Structure formats: structure tokens, C-alpha cells
Length: 111
Length: 112
Image 1: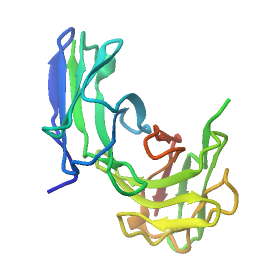
Image 2: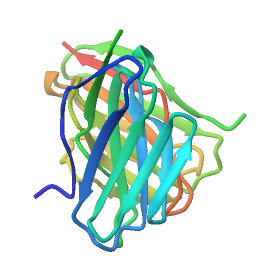
Image 3: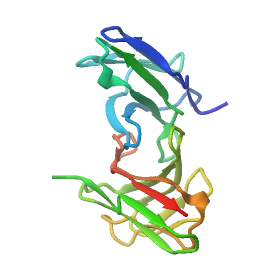
Image 4: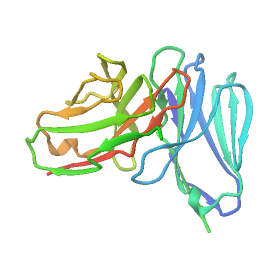
């Protein structure tokens, strides 16, 4: 089992709809959780981070964390074609100094 | 402005050549990382450093080596490049264990 798992997609979403991305992690002691967006051929850029259970909203993005169920999700409201990218979930495990990345979910927003 | 710099951005080189990919940062961060990523594929951690004179191998076995003589600088060296080394190499920095990790723009390496 991978430490951080994501559905590879592609997740196809009509323009203006909500895109829902999920990520599960295996280390129950994980402390911090990040979502990155990566356009093809570019480096990952941070969208959001979340540390506590519940929801965190930033513009059109909402991160949701449920530590008991060991999942973190990302909602993209009013999806735009410019949101088409691969979204990476990353987790700081309880031990160690490295972020653990999932394989990413590819999102396609169709006009 | 605090930033992460990688040079060169693109490199095409012949088999057997020695190459050094540069990464420097003005973020003031202690922790630095090198990732390798093939197009459309996962990120793989190949080296990391917690500070000056500290280097560790990552999760993916790599024939490259790194050094950390200065806080700001974390170069990656391939002694003898091979076509299997063709990939994108991403440098990243981070301050605390729970802090955000930031990525540089990457170096796209092609070995012929």
C-alpha cells in the first residue's frame, strides 16, 4: 500500500462545475497536509495547506481534512479551463523530515 | 525577493559527460531537496539535506551525488550521464517540518 494514494484520473469536469479530489494516507500520526497544482512541464505550486480537522476555504478552493478516516480532499468550485492540471496531495508523516507525495490526480475542465 | 533558482533550465548533453545541476535559494530555509520526475509520472525524492554538511539519499536510488557546503546552495552532480538520466530535476526548500515546501522551476535534462 502506498503511503499517500490518489486516483490518477483524468477527472473530467464541465466548466463551472465543482471538481472533487480525494487523497488517503496511511500514517495515522501525519501532521500537515498540502495540495499542490502542477501544470504540464512545470514545477508544483502550493494551493493550500491544512493542519486541523474540518474545512479550510481559500477563494474557489476548499480543503477538507478527516484525520479519523485518514483522508484529505480538495474541492474546486466554479472550475475553469485554467484549472486543468495535475493536483498533488502531500503529507508530513509523524516521523521523518520529508514530505510524502501522492501520484497526483489529473483534472480536465472542459469549456 | 525570496526565491529558488535552478540552472540550467534546459540541458542536452552526450552520454558519458559529467554534469552539475545548480540549485540556489534566498528563502533562508535549512532543508533542501532534489526530486526527479519523468513526464506525466510521480515525483521521486533522490536527495535531501537538513543543513550545511548534511546530505541523505532519498527514496529513489540515484547515481547522482549532492553536496551542501553553504546553506543557500545544493548542487547535484552526475559523474557520467546516461540516456536513462533523461528527466526533469526539481529542487525544493522547506524551513520547518510542518511548513510549506517550495519548488524551483526545474531543470529539464536530455542525455543523448
